[in-house]
Length: 359
Ligand code: NAD
Ligand code: DAU
Image 1 (cartoon, rainbow, N blue to C red):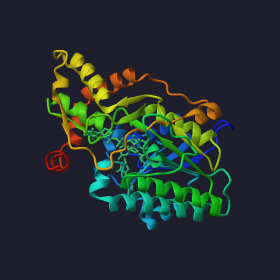
Image 2 (image 1 turned 90 degrees about the vertical axis):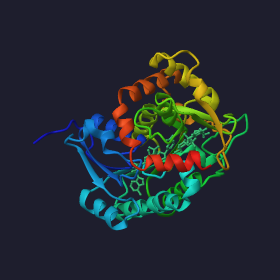
Image 3 (image 1 turned 45 degrees about the horizontal axis):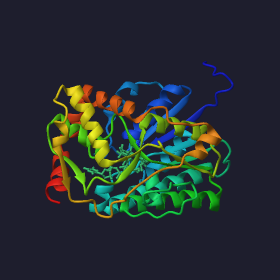
Image 4 (image 1 turned 60 degrees about the vertical axis):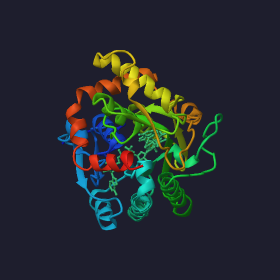
């Protein structure tokens, strides 16, 4: 019989979307940092989910994988019934804005119906005793809409989603709060800015550009490249989730952001500069690949998070400067080109053709 130190409380956590970009970093952190927790990863393994993201922990004794859809009520109810789940870290989502423009209903199904399905299962399973239970919903800053050249998103900024993706995430956030107010379900929400780092699927700006630079392919920049995003290294995001999960207040929302704003054009220029050095190419050669293409429909101009609440209440701050995080990210992609070529095989070519050559 193994005895855990009394300060450790045994928990069974359901992480959804653990085979995706952020979910895989989150699952790795929890599996390694909390060996006394049982971690169940529920993931449908869509195009964005990849079990090779979790190769290093797949045999850990406290880690279990279940392939399935968060909108499958029978499966989700069964997991709650069989595993005495005490916490949910809900990461699973359709996450790409461009795909939401061509297929909005897929976003309603996973992001709205899937979240409501999980909430109902948690409510039913926990209703006899809500103590020591947490339903943590991982959300995005895009629910707040688009900023002009000044100002920040605060936790009390009114919601103003403008893409099918952000509308579906806003709806899921509303359902989470509704379950808190109506049924007293113990919930927490965080809204984070743009993440970057290893295992990021190359449909998103940074990994797509890294992949294209490696292959000397054009770097598609929407519009004039003036849109601004606030970038945060993914390991800093999951560190914030860990702190909020364990120490954040029930019913509260926390903004997470990097205080690190870049226009898309300046960001890609910095990426080109670093990659020319690493690939031993002449300075300025990757920048020549920049290609301005038709703008994204309804393209939000600027996102910028004020994360003061998280810093003041829970002491979280980003740990990495952007140039350093980007440097680490590029190194990871250059050392993991097999991962990159595996994830761009199959349907990726069709997606790329549809997205960039038929616009
Ligand atoms: P991702 O697309 O890389 O991964 C999503 C994961 O969810 C994949 O493993 C996929 O297989 C799984 N999934 C999709 N539909 C599912 C379903 N119906 N049932 C079960 N699993 C399903 O996404 P990501 O970038 O890691 O984002 C994770 C979460 O973080 C999302 O909720 C997203 O809204 C949020 N978020 C992302 C960012 C970012 O910059 N990437 C920033 C803030 C918030
Ligand atoms: O802000 C958080 C959000 O960040 C998350 O909720 C989303 O899941 C995540 O995908 C991300 O959304 P963005 O739309 O900001 O990320 P993306 O990488 O798609 O685009 C970043 C910026 O780059 C955006 O202004 C659009 C632009 N862009 C993107 C692509 C893919 C280009 O100029 N060219 C491209 O090819």
